[in-house]
Image 1 (cartoon, rainbow, N blue to C red):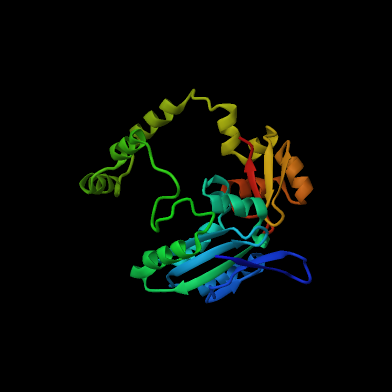
Image 2: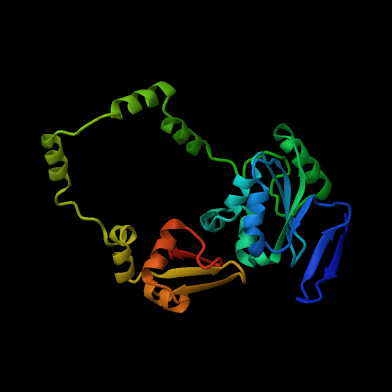
Length: 257
């Protein structure tokens, strides 16, 4: 299937458009349209497509709850941690270089069927797996699966644990024993730094700033340096690292590992 390439007169940006598909809705400015996207997706199921306006590469997905799914795409934490190609691409190029298309709305029980239709028709480059509903690009090892099995408690066990915890009050004797057991324990410098905003700042941990609008990445030697360059307080930097929220609608902040 061929793409049409046309140039936006104002920005001189190259746009790619598939000839045979007419989306139900097209969002061309993700930075400005975020709230509209979430609002329009309430209680709706359907198939969507991300289109990289720089190179024409696409990703197709579906969801029984589009609003919840799009919240994930706007999560700074997911963009940073996910190994999926579409998340990496958005992080690299920025939201402004993508457009979001709602290919169609459909019944909840038809989302995978309709997604498969578009996967077969359009063969999107960012989709690693070509079967709708597949896992996100990888399989867990048998060792990992075994660990999952060991961690899953039966419904009866969970109910008993919940019941035993309800209304539980620790006696003064028990409290003293717990307090005594914790005395003398020393947290590592690294642990204390991650637990405390003040310690994070004072120990000068390196910070990485991602600009999701330009795709630019910068590294700063400390929270103080990052705060000065972004014209905010160190507390603001620390809070954004903890919450994973996007600062000033364009900065993703994380500690350097």
